[in-house]
Image (cartoon, rainbow, N blue to C red; front, side):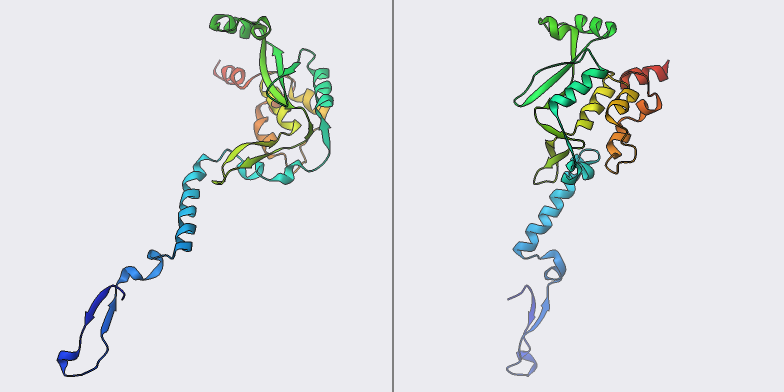
Length: 219
């Protein structure tokens, strides 16, 4: 029997009268969900809480359609990169990937020598600037998401992502990148590219890191 107050009317002289039931207000609405509804509500609450951990521009990055189109084999990508950055070197990295290294500037070398902790001469004189999967790469990649709809890793890395990393590491200039690989200005998938390269597009022939840029602004 539902919760509430039951008033018998027998004492009023009316016999065989059905009880009068006043329904508990907590029984009403969605405060009392069935098991399926409760699971849905709980999942919605968890997704809301988890949403603050989403990466920037995740809604675009999780779209697998970004990777549609022609591919560029990693060997051809590396060849084209070494045309505009002759000092760029590739070594075997994690399984199925190449690690990219580029000579440190004199200032970066001084910092590395002061910090120490490295005995291999190669890694003293060269800095890590990115990685390339040993595969055919799409121009634009996308990420996998977990059950909380949070990005976990790159499912496919696009070669534009590699270029962004090299531009921001001061290895290549923006002008060199678009001269060798084309300008994606009119590509509808370019939102992240345009955001991540803003300072370099404003200074297209210069090679610099974001730290260099910020220090120049403070000077």
